[in-house]
Length: 343
Image 1 (tube, rainbow, N blue to C red):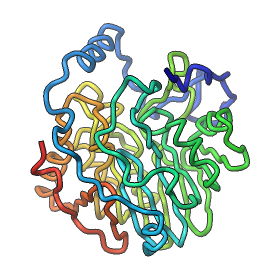
Image 2: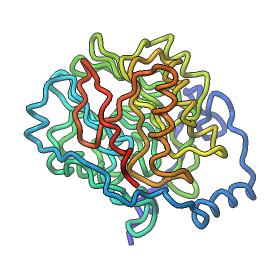
Image 3: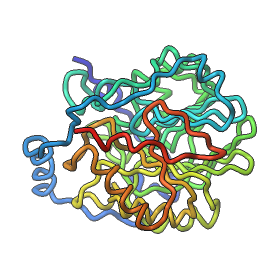
Image 4: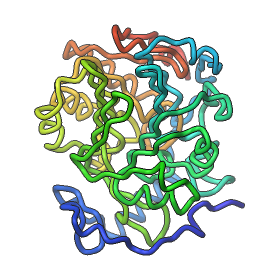
């Protein structure tokens, strides 16, 4: 048995200078209503024991395998979806990756928890040198101990929300590589700008570290090209402010999956994902946080079906590349609706 958080409980750091930090925890701009103990238990019980059929695909999810050489040969402004919220970007000759999770399960345990629907398009050891890892928060489906440790020797920079960087350092990552940011803070590396922006979510990897680290979305700017990476978030007014400050965006990588009517403050329903894209003044929308792990009660393909219907109704350009398929950021394509004939 492995448990990657058991030996990693940490003392509370002093983040008093952050407007998001009070009473020894990080907080959303708009307070999330408390979920009573009874309701929390009911949600957990349903998730564990009342799963409907269809939350896991019966058919094999199509994956286009990638090699290191293919990535090295790919033109600049290429995007490859590797699964869930893991996106590999090639910008100005360098590679950047969001929330790298290559684990078999999104869980603290190797034997229990949501299991992958598909293998990653490329093995960790085959990835090229990574200029920066961009992390949104510390949940297991976004921050994977084994993946971070394996990647570390080939990574120059880790960009994280406040507190998540401290966790990486405690895991043995060189502190010189780690930079952590509050909302509206950022940095520039090799001509690419990265700005940590607000999200409405929560954090925690164990029983005693609830909201001890911050969560964020990210703005990525490569000259005249602007990308938005949502991380995990409920729908909130912050999207409009991000759009006003940094939009319009050429592409939004927007959370569309693992939603539930009972979780509106931490995950968006598909219609909210579309509205957030519009608030951001987005041009193309690429739905993420789907197609890899079973994290809710909806069918595994429902996020794709719903966002496709909504985008068509609203005349929004929607891209749904297969895992491993290259997306040209200069001229995105719709992609095959690859899930349509799957069970």
